[in-house]
Picture 1 (cartoon, rainbow, N blue to C red):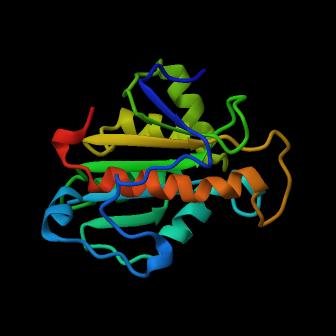
Picture 2 (spheres, rainbow, N blue to C red; picture 1 turned 180 degrees about the vertical axis):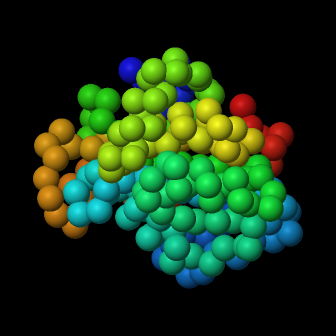
Length: 206
């Protein structure tokens, strides 16, 4: 069941022109002025997904694309697909909490393939049995963006503000390194969403 939320939905071709403080990938390494660098302080951008499972690999592939940019030292771009418990331990070991988290992945909800949905994680609480089921799934190798969010949230390890960016995969799960055409087109849209969130000041947030 999808969490209750205020949502913003984009098509893969949506334009976010004028809202970005950083250059497009094709323009070379990103540069930040002091204002944007301060706004992006202690931010974590994480991708979640499987390896070589086509559209279900969107999160890690998005991280690969973002890692081609240059980032300030207080913005961490990381594939978080190695398991919620390990991610939990890593976040708990951080010397200071992240102010902003942006977590990206493919989540099947019956929408149009390639559609992009961005929302603020509502911090909902699961019943103990359901939380334990999600932890068991994580331990056995299930890679799930929602499981990661629920587990980190339960232990108080999520960033102060957490943005979720979901991409709708094609229904069929198939092995392979390539994304389907509509989901591949969503890479640019999600990159623009990430850049806009990082460039926003706290006063810009809904």
